[in-house]
Length: 427
Image (cartoon, rainbow, N blue to C red; front, top):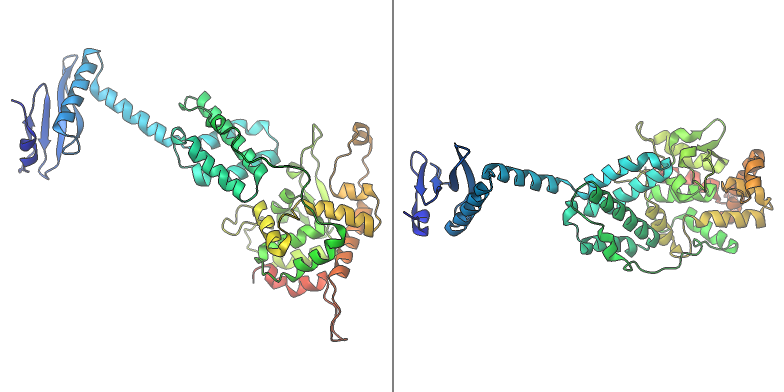
């Protein structure tokens, strides 16, 4: 006798579980709590078995019969419906767990030994900053070109066109890795070809030498009240003119207080061609030491980074933080982190009359000629120490302002550092 929907709906709970039978092994089981579930009873190689098809009323009578018939077809082909169901459930769970972040980190580890230390750190940092927060939790099979495009657009919106291009490349490599390791995906970045905005790369934006005075004053007065951690990094960059990546990942154990120098490890230096990376010495002026010392004395014992991210103190601050600070100072689009290097090169040559070679070594530039790379080992370290102090003193003269009080001391960089020592460390 066939069941009808009225019977299914009107079935009430009893003291013990009971069954309402349909045909061909299908029945509805009602528990003492009133829970109703469809089950199919069958024999596979002479052994009686049962498989749950779904819950009533979410699975209707008609749909339950269709699932029963599907199970009967599996039996005709020699397959056990319960085993097939378990396999599908495990497969679905596996696919759901194959998130972009899981596959991405697996891809990262697989390729890690083929990259240099700095390049590897940059890739992971970009993934963790720009990709994983938006897409990391998605099963990789469920990410569509539209979802990815929205993520890339957010990177472009802050003006980071080159980073958007790199992010697209990294995601494409992750998808290709996923495809080659059986995740059932393809590289969807091919569908977004031509969607990134065109932009002229050119040189990094940098102000001219005659604009340095106003720029230095803006930094040390900080009238826009930029966050202390950010203005500290910008001031230190002005004094040392290192690459942004070298600055934001600086560690306290790289500072030699006795020799008054900062030693950037070889692994963090930029790799150029096939030339082996070397550690880079940055002589620290008295002003640079005065800037760092109060921060060091007041830091937490576990703090390793000089310029940590505020929300994630175990990670370095973002390059975008530096750009944001420059924007707030009024230099949006006309000054970048890299622009400090071009500015220092021009100003030190023009105003302090130092030779190009000395400045070039301090910028950690690589000689273009292979012969020069092989034989020119001069580091000009003594001259560089003096140059860095002269540079800091020169910045002092630019920032100094005459006081209405004849007895008052002019405010230069050194004095501003002392006056703002507590501000620099957020006290």
